[in-house]
Image (cartoon, rainbow, N blue to C red):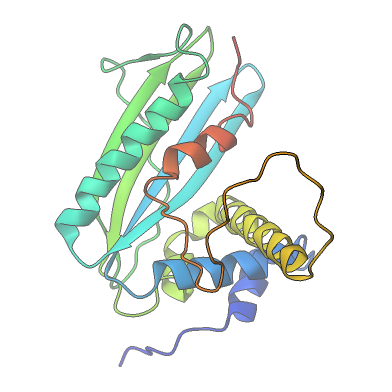
Length: 231
């Protein structure tokens, strides 16, 4: 019988961090944040970027959004792939072009699992300056029967352990920064004199999570700066 009790955040962090426990607090916060964000819906979109340039090889992984409907998840995977492409081209549109003739041989490693499978896959290749290629892949994983951020997801993506660790650390860093900003505001720091009155800030008593669908391209624009050849 399948155990539906999720592993603790601490246990998941220990698996990803290894003995060095590097940036462990951020990793814990990221796992906590993503477990809350993705919940226990049945389907998850995941995107990868695999890039060669004169500096070598870079890999990134992004956990997108979770859905109850497979059709919704497939539509969003297509949107994520378009966002990846646009974010990459926006910085060097004169150097990078979509290359429909070049078949992508990049297939992110996903382990065999007894329940969770790849239910949809889309790929895209960009050709850039000499020796530069960027390969993208968007997939729908599922069906999940309980909490998404748990042992089965880590098992499925165990071949991409570093990329998964990096994603959660980035998510944790962003969450901790928001928390520090909120704590500083709540501490009642002295107000700076202003000559022009500012619009009143919205109430902060009920915080809503960011819309990761709308912010996806913005987040990618921040991340693609790591290792991208600039014009």
